[in-house]
Amino acid sequence: MNDHQGRVLLLTGAPGSGKTTIMKKVAAGLSGKRIRGLVTGEIRRAGRRVGFELSMFTGEKRLLAHVDIDSCDRVGRYGVDVATLDEITEEALAFDDGTDIYLVDEIGKMECFSKKFRAAMRALLDSGRPLVATVALRGGGFIAEVKGRADVEIWEVTKANRNEMPAQILRWLDRWYNEP
Image 1 (cartoon, one colour):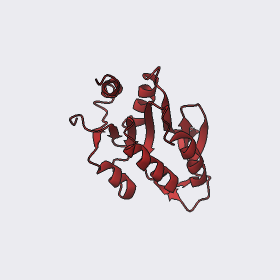
Image 2 (cartoon, rainbow, N blue to C red):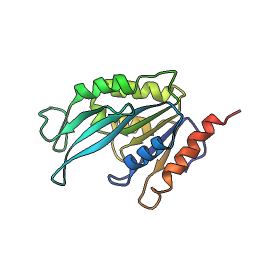
Image 3 (cartoon, helix red, strand yellow):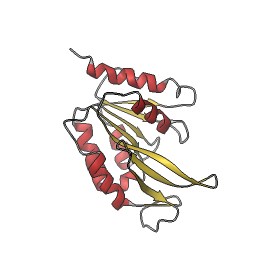
């Protein structure tokens, strides 16, 4: 893990490494803090993944992508609902002085279809507010831009370290609230 640099921590790792589970555990460990952001979850039908939904920390859930969505914006067999992503981005990722921490799962190919998502993430990255986000292991464009910033720390999630990662992230975040 890198030395303490900026206020942005990026988690990357292979699909299935546990990034989303870690983000949910981190959110649960932040009692008393005002959190904003998104968590991406799978939608399964008969044991098979058929789509993805976005959950805000308010409890609201919205469909992000699905095999039944007819869209020119596609990742694999999933059509992406960019209009819904734009709407939820305005609610969940708009900078707010009352927010202590932003948690964003994830900066991935589907999310990068949205200009509003990319703009909101750039604003959060530049805000100075603590931000923990998951980011695709591979990808060009905005994914590479975010990972290439000098002010971010990147931690790789693996099956070997994923169980300890939530506590490590909470300690990383705690440093921002115990500064002189």
